Length: 51
Image 1 (spheres, rainbow, N blue to C red):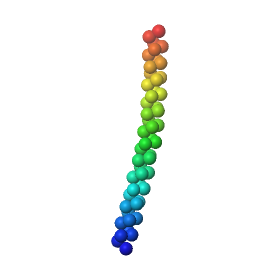
Image 2 (cartoon, one colour):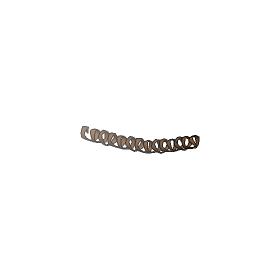
Image 3 (cartoon, rainbow, N blue to C red):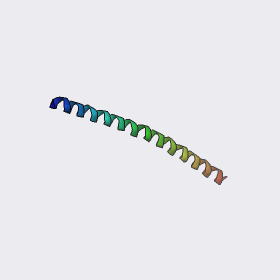
Image 4 (tube, rainbow, N blue to C red):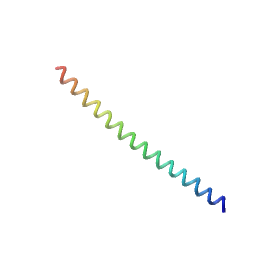
């Protein structure tokens, strides 16, 4: 009985960790995409203001 309980707890924890890791990874890539877009926009503004 205890072995079944801890097996369920273990795999639930592993699944939760995997889900959160995926969530953070996807969110991080979205943030990086936004960061580089904003950086590109700022560089374009700087180039226009120099001319």
